[in-house]
Picture 1 (cartoon, rainbow, N blue to C red):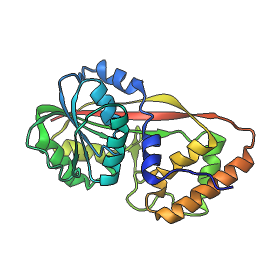
Picture 2: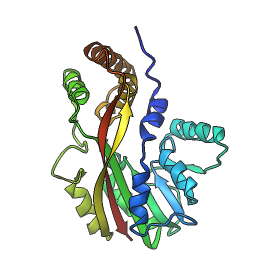
Picture 3: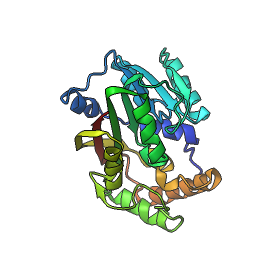
Picture 4: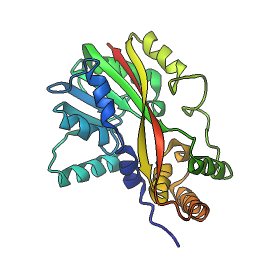
Length: 258
């Protein structure tokens, strides 16, 4: 039986909406205040982080190149009676004015950018002594469902194509070269830390999450749907009694000053 695993935009919205409150708690104790601050979230996707920043009374704008993802964000927000501005732009060319933002935020997408150009753009739009925050999160692969999913996918695709985040030496889940690039561009590293948090899944929601991962970003949508249906069939047969399971995730945060 074929299971509806959602389209690309809806999968992205569901998978990105797991930003834990601990993220904001850890920044608050480090002196990051959102209320009244002009904040640009770069690569805002379906607006999961943007909405959380808006809730904390930041004057936030989301910058996103995908019109489809912007429309998904706006559809979600219209149902919540929110009016958050979004701008079509990229990390390399945001279309934002010079030195206008107190904070720039990038979550889960720095690896997708032309990093040398993007870091220069972050410096351009930030005010003097502004704050640049790059964050990422990922599940830990200890659970048998994750191990079986990886083994299954490795039969189909190259899990880590050239240029992926998994390449090279890493520190707290970030490639070391990112830290070098930021510092060479003139950003002053203020804090760099991780914490862990749990996320609950069903087999279906796990397969939806897999569809949003960078593992499959280089796979055509039609082939991706076939792979996800196959994973769902495989895991449902392997774990017929599994109603829900919990995966520990690691959240990494790098805080810099302009």
